[in-house]
Each structure stands twice: as C-alpha cells, then as structure tokens.
Amino acid sequence: MAKSRPKKELEVEKLVTRLNRMKVAVVTSTSGLNVKGTNELRTALRTAGIDYVVAKKTLVRRALEQAKLADTVDLKPLAESFALSFGYEDEVTPAKVLAKFAKTHETVKFLGGVMERSFVTSEQVTMLASLPSTDELRARLVGSIASPLSGFVRVLNGNLTGLVRVLDGYRSKRAETPV
Image (cartoon, rainbow, N blue to C red; front, side, top):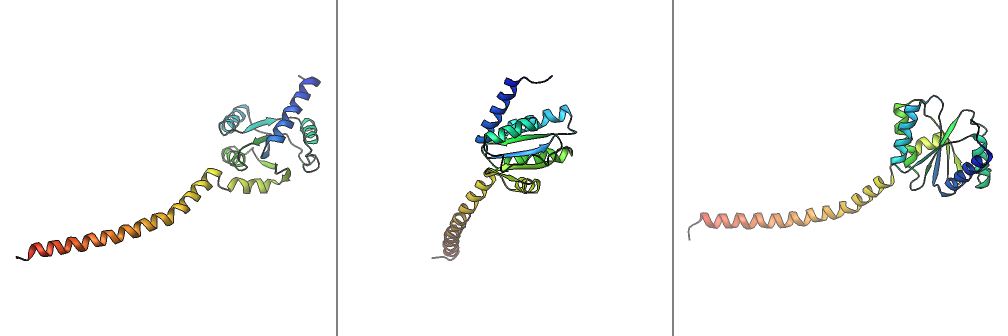
C-alpha cells in the first residue's frame, strides 16, 4: 500500500530530527534478512538505545537535504535496500551491536555511515565496531589511575609486613632464650 504525502512528510520530518540529534548513523543492507531476523535486530538495537529505521532512498535523500547533509552523504552508490541505525549517546555502540548481530546473520553488511556530519566508508564503520565502548574506556582509565596507587599501597604494606616479621622474630628469639 502506497503512503500518502502527509505520511511521507512526517517520515521525512522524523528522519531530519534523528539526523540532527545523532552522533552516528550506520547504514546497513537489509536485503535477505527475514522477519524473525529483523525483529531480533530491532530488539538488540532498542535495548542499546539505538533507533533502527528502514526508509525509501528518496525519503532519506530529502531528509539529508533538509538536515544539510546532502553534500557530504551520497546515496547513489547504494543500489540495494538499506536501513539506518542512529546512535545518540555513543559513536561506537551502534556499530558494535550491528557487528555482533552480523556474525550470526551474514546478510547484514555495513554499507557506510554518517559521523560528525561527514560520510564514513564501510571499512571505517568496521574499524569503529572494533573500538572499545565508552564504558570500557572509562574502566581502563580508572584501572590505569588506580594501578600506581595500588602499587604504592603494596610497597607501604610490604615495609610494614617486613617490620612486623622482624619484631615477631625478635620476640620469638627472646622467648627461646632464658632470662
């Protein structure tokens, strides 16, 4: 069933809002993915806080024009049907979730993406998926900050432990020798 003009305009408006709000949009192929797989993908993306949109190329092109991204993003090379996954909080999470899903569903492929208002290639999106997430980076930072502190605590503890052992040895030696 064909969409009416107001429905198409509403869809373009929603796409423009998402494009203006996003930190990253990953473009993936949707051809060959069955309904069950699509529902699994939508669920995985939704739990990560990522919007998944399948739209016609002409509507996406109009949304890109209205969001002033038409100069940087070219949809002409995309011959097959595609979907956009919008990440609002983290640049890495959409690519990571899609890459994890693509391991079990070989029909899902990266076609490119939009990051920092410029187009990125599928190879760059694949590299983006291999980067650690923000939470992982924070954990590494805390670990690297805590590492010298814990080493310092062990050094101080070692000195005190050595002193206690010397005093205990001296006490046991005095206990063995009669007065």
